[in-house]
Image 1 (cartoon, rainbow, N blue to C red):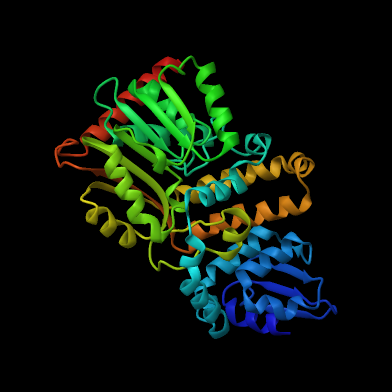
Image 2: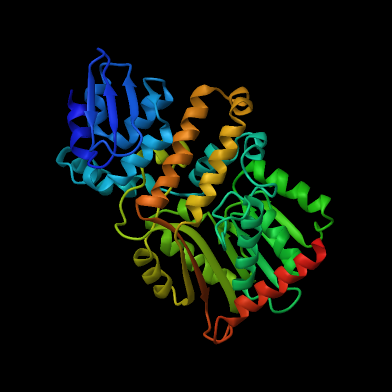
Length: 410
């Protein structure tokens, strides 16, 4: 079968066995590592999978047309990720990737109404779902693992601390805008940690309801306000702006609009910190399965695409940090919690949904481990004097706040 021939070329390292719809068996790879056996339950897959493996493999697993009979989905996806460079160089597959690159701008149309539809597709799912695999603050973005052995809760708390330090919250009463404020955890943290007056904007109706209720429950609704609106509709001015996990939804053709709006919103001595998923090399198209089923309209930039636009908007880059395997570890924690609560999630949705999210969580983790995905944080100002001359203030803030939190816990 054609798919067997493709896998025999692609899987240079690993141990893969394929069983076609007729029961015939094919071995792929050099035999190293634990064997993974896949059964194809639909004869049409033998040809279809060759056309667009990243999309159709995931779809077939979701629909039960592929079953894992030996090993695990994680083992199979990691095997593919380790050999992905071979798949990219396959002539037929590379033609599909090239077509995706040429048409990706058509998929990045992102006016205000369309942006809200894309957000609702993912973030307006049941809140109970997110409670079953996220930390207790519902931080749905890359955590910050200082040592690698922290709990998910600790790593997410350290992420918020790290962002606050980079925002240079050097005086009380700063006006802070959180673009893509999620369920409100980061905004509430900034209000407490830096005594800020926070405005959060989100396009998710579910996140908006939760964040408003959280602010009221915390007794902070007098200085933490969450709004259901597009950041482009805001007309105020802010001393500090932060955006975490939202820029991936802006789209390449809209980068200039984004940074120009940030420039309009930021005071002359203000500080903006952008936290986004990125790539370390080729600015290629997003995985078609992720774009179709998980995050429609999403885009993954390289620093080389983003930095020139920032400079063209007369903004200054004052700090850049590339976080490499932090998101891989975050996704590993999420997937473990997802599997621990799989029966409850299947009751909320169904088995197809569970298989789709398994492919999403494991596939993204392997993207960060083996396929050049990373997270970057860029600190941006309008003035070279907006932040201190060295990075010492970041470490001092983190040390002081972490020490205070440790004493409070004792």
